Length: 237
Image (cartoon, rainbow, N blue to C red; front, side, top):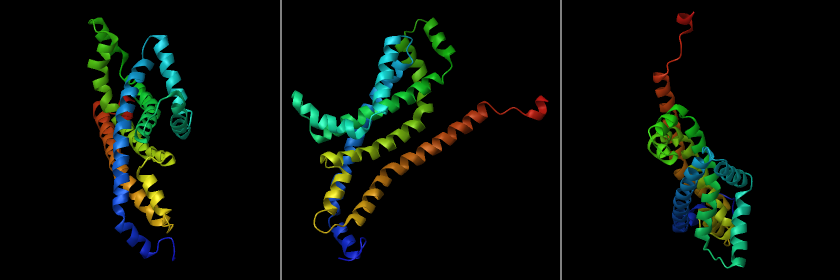
């Protein structure tokens, strides 16, 4: 059989590579769907958490704490196994997008909350004094300024989201990880090449996002240094 990385295993992988590409496409589609859901939920609950109304803050806190402190795997298994008992039948693609999106929505909500609170309160007060409602002041004044600040952590959340779509392999979700594991276990046990190829495909998705977030963060720090230059201690002395 040779070693785990024998040449014949690699030859078989390249001949069957369309199987991996199919899983790669499913992973991309699930990631996009889950990311859109996470952004929508993150904005809503981020606004709730910065609201002056206690019930909205409580709702946001419960949502964030629950989903941040329970494993994503349990959430996926619960939806997959429990919902059919109440007559709700979802395909595995929908389950993946829903569970991963809701899970990461809690983290996005915290990113949005931190971004909003980083904007000086005087801007919100000025907007309210001009007759803007809370939602209007957030939508037209606060959130546009928040976007630039939160983009790097949001990109990091997108990376984590892409990697977490691999939980679909546990429910035969047809994603990249599931296709790789199924292919490798089908007779020849070629796990070495399968997991190397899978890791590289995930890397192709995640590395550009991480690199962009790092560059954007450096740009933000440089801009802040120009706008707010550090004080010269010798001059102040």
